Image (cartoon, rainbow, N blue to C red; front, side, top):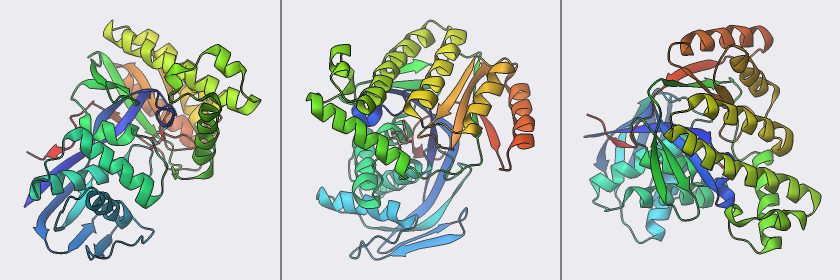
Length: 352
Ligand code: GLA
C-alpha cells in the first residue's frame, strides 16, 4: 500500500502569463489530496470527497466527462510516451477543495503520477511528471491550461515560492518571509477553467504572438505591442506588465519587503480586473476589504471569474482580517465562502 500526499497551489503573482510562456510565481500549499492505493490489473478509485468511483479498463481509455478523465489522461499520455504502467485500487481523500481555483485537478493528476512512478518504476523526474500531467489535461481532458498548476504541485518547496520561467522551465526558490501570512479566500463561486473566458483570452494572446512572430511574451517590446489590433494589444500589454511584476515581486520578497509586495499584488489585481477582465464582483470585494482592513495586499489567484483570492498579511493580523472579510462577504453575497491560512508546502510526496 502506498499513500501519496499531493498539495494544491496558490499563485502569488504571474496570472494568465503561463500560456504565453511568461513568468509565474506560485507556491504549493498545505491543503492536500491524499491517494492511498495498491497496484492492480484494473483501475478502481473511490473518491471519499465526491462519493464517486472511477473505474475503467486500461485497454479502453475513452473520455467519460467526469473526474476519472484526469486519471485516464495520465495513462493516455504515458502510453503515448511508450511508458507502461499497471492499474491501481485505492481511495482519494483530503482537504483540498475541488473547483476552488487551488489546483485540485493538477493535484489529483500528480498524486496519480507519483503513485505510478513509484509502483511501476517509471523513472520520471518531477519536471517530467509536471509535463505529463499538463499534456493529459490539454490533450485528453481538453482543458487548455498552461504549466503553472502542475509545476507548482510537483516542484513545491516548504516555505518558498517558485519563480518560474514557463518557456525554459528554469526556476528559482524564493523564501516567503516568516512574518508574512498567506490567506487563500475561496469565493464559493466554482469556476471551470475550460470556460469560455479563459479559452477566449488564450486564443487572443496566442493570435497576437503569432502576428508578431514572437514565441514568448517575455520578448515583447512596446513597439511590438503598438503594431497590434486594439484587443490583442490590450491583453498582451497586460501580460507584459504582469511579467514585469513577477520579477519585481521576486526581488522584493528576497529583500523581505512584504509591504511593497502587497502593493504590487493590488496593482496586479486592478490590471486583471480592468484590462484583462477576468475578475468578478466577489473577488473585487475581497481584495478591497482585505486592503481596507490592513492586509499588505490581495489579488485574485488562478484563472479568475470566481475561484479564490490570495491575501498577504502580517502573521499577527491574518486571522482577524480573514474573519472580518468573511463576515462582510456573507452579508453581501449568497455563496458559502471559506478561507485558509496556508503555508508553502513541499511538492507531491509519499505521506510519512
Ligand atoms: C489556471 C490554469 C493555469 C493558468 C491560470 C491563470 O489555473 O490552469 O495554467 O493559466 O489559470 O494564471
